Length: 119
Image 1 (spheres, rainbow, N blue to C red):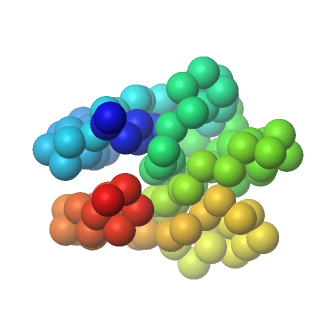
Image 2: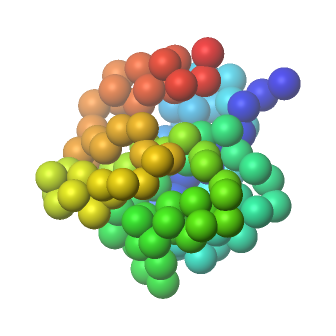
Image 3: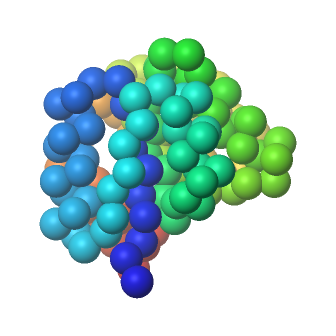
């Protein structure tokens, strides 16, 4: 069975890049453009991994993760940010966050994350 990876980013280019890498690694990809859309998809599909941008329209990455955790939903989460130090502070105390990576990111970093968390 393929693992489901939910990618949340409002930039189409990032979505497409991550989708390609994740599919090449043999996983199913779900895409959301904002935190609220992602929240709904998480409820419906129960992804195995969440890769989300820190800054999102409607509901940011921290808000998305916090809302899930309040409902007892803990999806292993990788947070992407152009300001990783700021994102790490905002994500402090959120149990689902396994890694914060900076944008732009090397493709090999994503491949390593997929291997470490899904294999």
